[in-house]
Amino acid sequence: MLNTKQQEYVDHAKKMFGKTTLSVAELKKANSKFGCKYAPQWLIKNKDYKVGKSLFKLPVEGDVAKNETPNKEAEKILTPVETKKEAAYIVSSLTGNIVPKKDPIFVSFGNYPDIKSIVKSNRFYPVFITGLSGNGKTMGVTQACAEAKRELIRVNITIETDEDDLLGGYRLKDGQTVWQNGPVIEAMERGAILLLDEVDLASNKIMCLQPILEGSGVFVKKINKFVKPAQGFNVIATANTKGQGSDDGKFIGTNVLNEAFLERFPVTFEQKYPSVAIEKKILNNTLKASGKSDVKFVDKLTTWADVIRKTYFDGGVDEIISTRRLVHITQAYAIFDNKMKAVQMCTNRFDDDTKNSFVELYTKVDSGASVEDILEDQRKADVAAQTENDKDSESDDEEVI
Image (cartoon, rainbow, N blue to C red; front, side, top):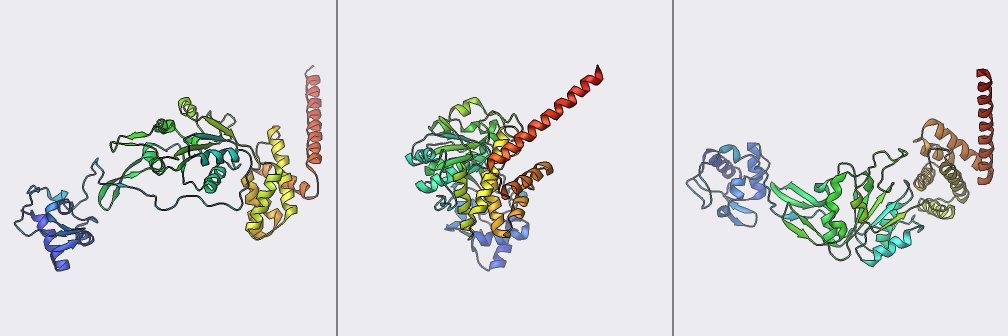
């Protein structure tokens, strides 16, 4: 027996479509009059009303379905049902081929051959890659997968990343509560490479990855299912630190990672910036991809960056020019066809003093100064400044006496 609200819906649907057998889409459309965008759950959840795939018959007055309880509360009929802790079905958001594309700009250097060997091996052997920003950590992993034709799933880690983001959770789809696999489960079931990017930004919520980093699978308690990794599954993590935080404050937001978590990575690669020769190849490839060529400009850029890096590692400056920053400059040059404009625009992110000193340094390089000449000038300037400071200190001491 239908209650008042149910009968009102049935009468409206019959009048609207002029028939008693309706599709799910038609049921949804009819229910929109009552302020709900989903098909009525009391109807589609009842197998006695189903007459075919996505087809349901409208009950006539006096019908009492076998599994229907008469006189349900009206407000539970035409409003979305409460989410149940049971998945209607498991869905995947990944379809098709997810093998990365080869980047024409990329040039192999540093740890890349070893990373490629691990990726190609199809073995489970977690890898931790650490190094300063913009030195090709993520691109190296991506291109290793592209060369080996291995699927890659990249997850950018933040302080908010938790088990629901990684393993999966319940989502609303077509009016039903479904379980959607997270990137970790997807990578495990597909036998893909899982890239945990910027992993040192994570909180202790990523400890759910502990059993996964052991290669033995994981029990997903929310759906009562054990997921065993397929052949080829592996985990690679990248970070600016070694998981011990950032003492100098350069990488704010990084955290001290659990020692047990870090211990599950058999090897750690320390990624350095590429050599001058390698960077020249990268920048020339970047210009070539943009339809330009300027070997002299590339030589000056790499010389400029080399001086800044040497000064940075000696403690002379607080900022550094990364390989990524050099690529940005060459891309800006390809767009604006103005070298100084490209340099200035791409150094504007630094504070005024640093930006001005970097631009001034580039003008010296552009005028033909070598790395050795510039470093020698800086050394002499530092000595002169120190001598002046010592004189001022002695003068202050004499005044006190």
